[in-house]
Length: 87
Image (tube, rainbow, N blue to C red; front, side, top):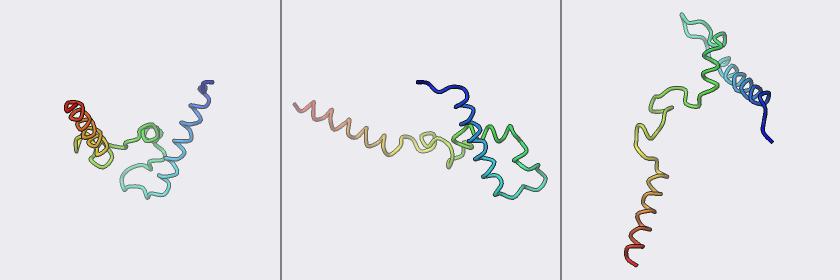
């Protein structure tokens, strides 16, 4: 059974409400309008996991190369290949 458009819209509304709740706890920046009034910004924040592309929020592979888990998998793969070559 597939989920319909109503479910997708409800999930999007829930994500936007979560972002608005988070914004409510931060004081406004001088000279800028309150963020909770900017629906476009709220929509972007709700639809993206990484809020920006800095080294803390963005893709870790872009900054540091492969992740620890990927490095372990490569080592394990190399050990298996050397074991096959020995046989």
